[in-house]
Amino acid sequence: RGPACADPGLTAGIEGIYLRDVQAGTTEIVSVLDRSSCGDPALASNEPSGNPEVTQAGELVFFDSAASLTADDRDGVSDVYAYDPATCRVLNLSAGLNAPASDPASSDDGRFVAFESGIDPQIAVLDRTTGVLLPLGAGRDPSLSADGSQLVYTADVGGVSQVFLVSLAGG
Image (cartoon, rainbow, N blue to C red; front, side, top):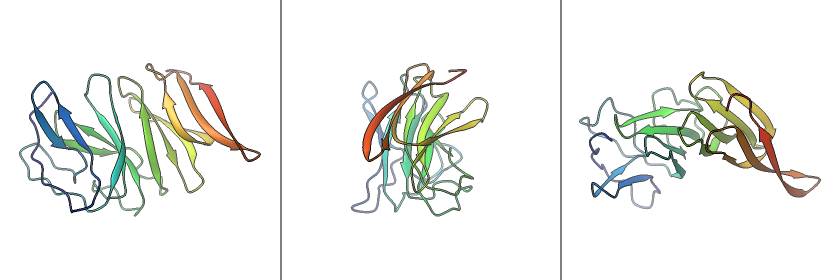
């Protein structure tokens, strides 16, 4: 783990994402505007963030936010982000989709990230190593196996919510 980043605080009533290091006894804010390093001042978000997911080793935090937290976020809709505590960097994983993205789920190592995208939610899986984004079709509430080889999600079929299991190649 890198140094703890300063907490700029959030606008009153705005939900944010925080990372607590129990061993070090520190808490840092995750849902802030991107900065180049932990020493730079952070700007708090004025829009809510939610649905945090932490990799097994705590190396990355994934979350969604209605705020524009990175320079490449210009679409005005919710996006999925990755936060690296070692560098205090925020990365937009759904940049360029021009559609809302939310509810991230990751493999234990953070290589694979599944999330909902679009007005009528579609499930997409991003391989962060190759940059390949795999759209899978209508669904919500994604969950990935530890190694990223299996995806579970729900979808309505004929007005009935059903659970689907998909094997992902390369996971």
